[in-house]
Length: 379
Image 1 (spheres, one colour):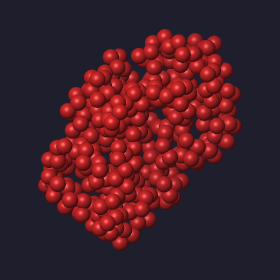
Image 2 (cartoon, one colour; image 1 turned 60 degrees about the vertical axis):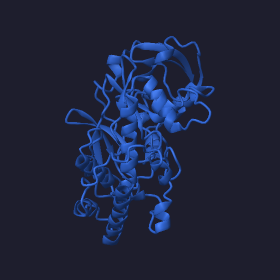
Image 3 (tube, one colour; image 1 turned 60 degrees about the horizontal axis):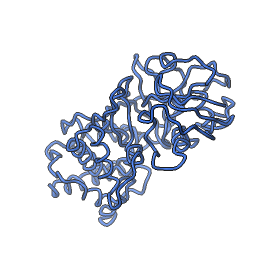
Image 4 (spheres, rainbow, N blue to C red; image 1 turned 90 degrees about the vertical axis):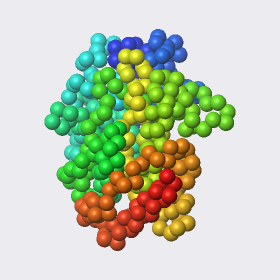
């Protein structure tokens, strides 16, 4: 099956797919090379890797069950049926015999109904259902795009029966608000019908028809890295060469590192960091608003308890350990140490989870206070 890879209404190249949506070939004669996707450019067959990485993981929530219900073979099939559309960029696949235009399919302006957090799904296997942004929704946490009061919002659940990850997002917002920091994604709690946990959370999309998200992973793999240069410095260098203010970007990254440390957020991988890019000029504007801090307090991982464990917290980020991440921070005075959330506020938020114990709440507050003390010492 042949499709044109599109960016809005620009034809970029021709791609060939199997019946289950896997890309098997593409023309390397790109019509607009500068408009091609960024991620994996340093690898052979990079467009195949980009497409495979774009699809929703089968292990996300109940995706595998949903696909079987819809009569689909694979998440690649689901993505191709939805033309590879996303709410974070402007790439899509246009059937070569189609007269579809960007105005007909883009999800910033056209409504969609697919909700993969629901217990019930449309079993239709044909193309009659509205296009969905969920087919390209990455990550293992169960989540769904939805439309709430006219706004595109991302609704997220949790791993397991606890509301911890959703509450952690709200705690991070409380920290950023207290700090007076303006570049973060605001999360709010909400009830999700049919789920074992008390709360999920939601946030408004920070992308639109003129502003897209480019992940740190895409930036890092868009350009060959010089020998001896870290991914961290490579990211800053490439972003600066594409228009971002390097010092502002570095300061935003350092603020993120310090607040992640304070909250013991252990999962700041390269798809959980990004920049906003202007759709027309392709210039990078600023680091994307901080998002996905659900793994705060090492939720879902081995929670550090002893002095030795607190000194050796492993993270999924630019470095393997928190202590090494802190070494990347040049400006240790970024955080206002008199503007941290209080223990009472943390206890109030953490206690919203009926599945957690007072002992666990007390422990998380103790870990937080230990981190507060250490941040104050490194200033």
